[in-house]
Amino acid sequence: MWRAASRLGAAVGPGRQPTRALAMSPWPFSATPRDYSVPNESWSREMRRLFDHYSCLCDTEEQQQSAGWCKFPSYNRSLKHAAGGKYLSKMVQAKARLFTRNIEEPGAGFEYAVFLNKQEKTSVTIFQPGHLLEGPPGHLHGGAIATIIDSSTGTLAGALLGPSMTANLNINYRSPIPLGNVVLIHCKVDQTEGRKTFMSCQITSSDGDKLHTEATGLFLSINLGRLFGA
Ligand SMILES: CCCCCCCC(=O)SCCNC(=O)CCNC(=O)[C@H](O)C(C)(C)COP(=O)(O)OP(=O)(O)OC[C@H]1O[C@@H](n2cnc3c(N)ncnc32)[C@H](O)[C@@H]1OP(=O)(O)O
Image 1 (cartoon, rainbow, N blue to C red):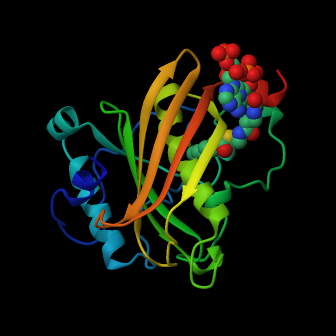
Image 2 (image 1 turned 45 degrees about the vertical axis):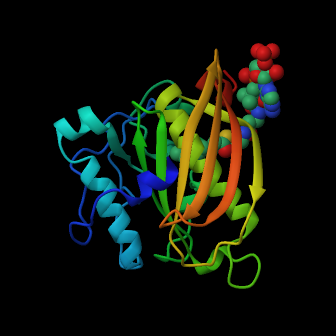
């Protein structure tokens, strides 16, 4: 299934923006800030091709109905953009930023965009790892791989469940990921039991031919107030 999804369709032009980005955030904050998951000058041709491909699947209402894809926006901090509400007064650490969006230089860190298919309970992240994420020479750090897996599965969990946290993550590193190489992170929900959602995930090369990483994760839906000591 992963492979088929990555090979669908054709590119339609550089930097195409999906017209049907997900409108509703699972978090109780208004969000009109900069969306980091759009093409910038650091994106390779392959990254743009994949972005265009998945954006096309999000394009129209009809396609949404039949295919169910939408792009999930990505900000550098959810709380920063809170419009109000009971948690606003508890905002602390104003300088805090989302781990994956805190490197200013385009292309140096995590360049990625998450596309969700709510009907199928799946997601695909297109990911171009930058030079500041090095582990083994020329290759992606295992912790950075865990981070993008956690972010991808966490985004899918959040979109489906609302506020939730990673309780468990198991990762098998199968083959190293060269820095700069675009990879696909395919996530799916395997099972839901009450507050628990079990996910699995694979990282493959952009053509789907090479398996880099496999992971499973458990997410628990939470009462957001608990994070703030409520
Ligand atoms: C937009 C960007 C998206 C980024 C997403 C990133 C997501 C993250 O990284 S979150 C940060 C990392 N995660 C954390 O820090 C979580 C720390 N842990 C916790 O806060 C808590 O342990 C938490 C919330 C996971 C669970 O606590 P709590 O809600 O009290 O649940 P608890 O009552 O202990 O357990 C509920 C059920 O889950 C099971 N469970 C809990 N933890 C685990 C675990 N690690 N493994 C297996 N089962 C577990 C329990 O056994 C229990 O099962 P059952 O109901 O069958 O008896």
